[in-house]
Picture 1 (cartoon, rainbow, N blue to C red):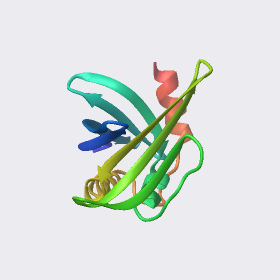
Picture 2 (cartoon, rainbow, N blue to C red):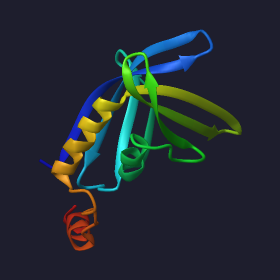
Picture 3 (cartoon, rainbow, N blue to C red):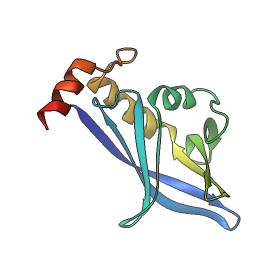
Amino acid sequence: MSRVSSLIAVRLETSEGAVPLFARFSYSARSPYAVQADFFDGLSVLASWQFERQMLAEGVRRPVGEGDVTFCPQRGAGGAEVRIGLRNHEDGREGHAVLRAHAGALKAFLNRTYAVVGEGEEFLDLDKLLEEFLAR
């Protein structure tokens, strides 16, 4: 298995309250440093983000990040959560979103990624990538 993904319920914080959404967190051995997160309601993808797996792993234990992506563990009504801050600077406009996810679900996803590529074993096999590229 060289790819894993998990569907995780998240809550988008708004001025009117929390909006329930889903996030698909994906990881692939082809890009061993990165986690892809697609946030959606129903069938529509609202936003896609990519960030470092190590940053997510640290973010479930302590506050990390400054800038476009931040993670901060917190206590929520349902137990341990992770606050995910996302900031976008597109077309001269700035957007900001705060989401909350269950820490246990994120940890379970991370454990599945370590079965694909162990923690600290990330590397890019440039020879293999070049071989695949030239084969196309």
